[in-house]
Image 1 (cartoon, rainbow, N blue to C red):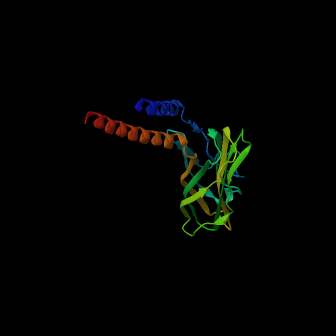
Image 2: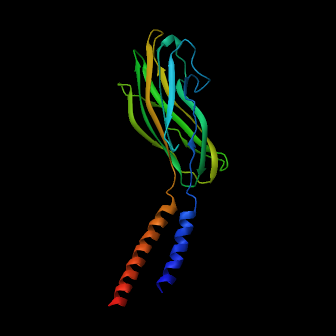
Length: 226
């Protein structure tokens, strides 16, 4: 009787353990750089800027960072941003989305500041984009934005590959040609949030069944010896 009970459980467990777990390649090199006109190729060569990224070992999280300036008002132009674009390898499943955490500060000697953010993770096979695009908003007088949390809508279609692009935009107005602008992007942390794998919960359930059956068998053996 015990063998009859254990056999289907062993088959189920073997099937679950043998199934490959979903593997995510994640974010590729996004090539961040500072630019005018929301990403026209960069800043003039006489203006200092540097940008880079770090990617988590599993590829599911990427952090963008950099700084630019000082930039004189006479050299400033509309659409100033930290821009990026690169590939994303899935899979992308219905229910998946991504979150963004922003930390940056801007320093100016005159004028007014406002900021906006845009990002889109595009699914090639699903032909669907998940976009974050809040409205242009004024910056506080300190020029600091800390721990700003943003979340994208969930995907509704399956996909395998995609492209991730976006920018952190800062607008400067009411300045004079001699005023100075500087920005330090401490971190733009982007994390892909896949829906939970069903395999893990099924394996836990199977392990609990094994435990119960083992205890049942132990009690039966004790009763047979008594």
